[in-house]
Amino acid sequence: MTGSFFSRRLLSLFLSPHNAGTADPCHASGEAVNPACNDMTVITLTVAHGRITQARFKTQGCAAAVAGASATTVLAQGRSFSEAETITLDDLCDFLDGIPDGKKACAATGPAALAEALGRLRERGDRP
Image 1 (cartoon, rainbow, N blue to C red):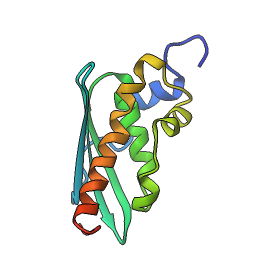
Image 2: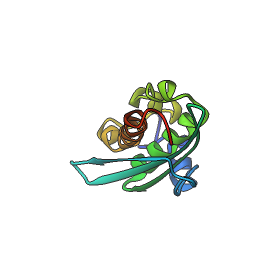
Image 3: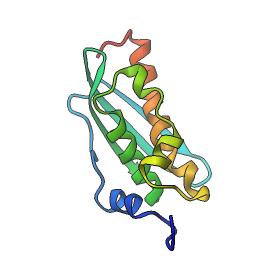
């Protein structure tokens, strides 16, 4: 990132996010809140045969929170549950061409909400 607080890719996903909304049908959901600023992300999933076929998000928060949630859903779609569980903040930093240090906790609500949704699926035995 040079010459700007946010990368072009992060700003692009903030202004035109991918996968905003609610998965239909929704087989699992997860929520995460950044307690420092109250950014909140909810991720909903549609699954089939152990894979995420649809990942959607709703976020109330700053540009980093919205772009982070959007990036999380892009990275999660098509992956198996175990593959999706490995999505980290570092993956988002790579995907978004960087996240300012002071905004990383905001972006982290995406992977945290995804992890909660996947945990709920695991509790049910991976069944919708």
